[in-house]
Every structure is written in structure tokens, then in C-alpha cells.
Length: 323
Image (cartoon, rainbow, N blue to C red; front, side, top):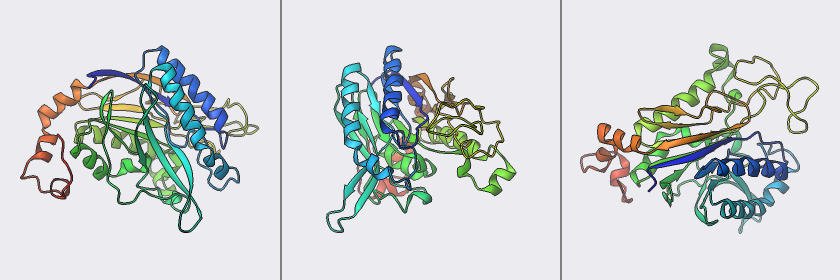
């Protein structure tokens, strides 16, 4: 396992149902990351299409998902860099009902161009449920990678400590979480209490998950313009509006949260270009896994999970525990 590695947090602004444009933008970021010595490049959830399930072009774009997966594999091989291409929404036909089925999938692609692991989003945010199919009761699985044992989660999974615990109990040391999390996911009431409520939630959860599991958490969220000028349209023209979380515009395009970061115990949040920004951009972060091991030596979370006296479900449900 690599004790230190560089990860590129690519806070992409996904243009709506423009997979080729989004892929080209992502590829340019990945090339830059490789030139800067990154071992791993991570993109956000829905990075090829944005989240527009009612758009008539959305289903067709999802049906092309395998084309882009193959192109990411080729890019990983060419650049000798590991890639987690955010999530790719895949369209399948249900064998029994013959209906189209959409699943939201994260992949870990190795630097030799092979797929080391695949994860279908389990915990769907409630607006997703009419459109996506969950992986339901299938267990979370750890992926053996060049940076060590990795778990993949997606967006709303972050809200469930149980998902992290299951991966940690199976031996994961790094959890990668591509997201499309917006500031307006908070309710009007919550925003009236604190306009930064959703940002506070993200900042708090990512750091908490790193501490409570003595692991590294790589959180990569979609970015974009915090606001667009009245004569500009998201996804169809170049953004020139105000960026940052301080804007109080009512523009429908003011919702991007960004805040992509790596969280490590003892250290907190890393990612100078993105951790305090909603704008599209990239952070290259040096991840020192010694912090993870020293945190475990101090807090002994994994040791407690592995002990016979630990009384929670993961120890006694018959699944492997690898700590």
C-alpha cells in the first residue's frame, strides 16, 4: 500500500446533457493532474450529464455510458493514473419487465486501464428514487487498489455512518465519495436559519467520517458558477457570474456547493483550490496515510470493531472483518 500519494480533486461543472463536452473537460483536468504527479484522479457524481432526469435527452445520454467508461480506461492506461470517473448513470433493460432501468455507478479504474471495482449507489436521495434503482441489500465491498484498500460511496451515502462502518469493518483505509450535492438540498427553513447550512453539513460530515473511522475520506463534489448573470444560461454558455458561497442571488444556478476536499484524522480538510470554493477547479492533495495509522494507534476504532466484545451488527452478522 502506498503510504503517501497524490490525489486530484476535480471539481467539475457538469453541463446539462452534454457528455462529450463534459468528458473533454474532465480529460483535460486528468491530463493536468497526471503532469503534476497525481496517482489518482477523482471526478464528481453525474459529471457527464448533470442531474436532469426529466430532460428528454437524459436517457439517451445514459445509454451511451459504456462508450465513456471505455474512454476513461484508455485514458488511465495512457497517463498511468488511477481514475474514479465520478459516477456514470447506466441504462439497462430489466429482463422481466422489459422496462428501462437506470443505476448510478462509481468505478475504480487502475493505472493499467483495468476496472478494479464497481459500486452502485445504495442510498438514494429522495428526488432520485422515481428515476434510479438502488443496489438495496447488496453488501459494500472493499477494492484492493494501488493506494491500498478502498471503499466507494456516492453522495447521499455520506449521511449514513453505517456505510462507512461496513467498509471499515471489511478493511478499507480510504473512502472515496463522488457527489452532486447542492446548497439548495437544504430546506427553505434550514436556509432561513443559516444560509450556509448545507455547506456546514458537508464540512462537518466529511471530517467526522474521517475521525470516527480512522480513515481518509476523499470527497469530490460538482462545482460551477455560484451565480450567473441574467443573460447567461447554465450548460449552454460560458459562465461569468459571481463565484463563492457568499452570493445570495435567487438564480436557479446559484446552488453549486463544491467544497471538494480530503479529510484526514488529526489534519482535517485538505484541498486549497476547492475546499472553500464552489467554482469549477482542481486541487492536488498529498495524502499521508501515516495520519490514518497514527489515528488508529491513538483511538483504536478498528481494534474495537475487531474485538469479540464489540456488540454491533458488523461483528456478528457473518461477514468478514479485516482490520
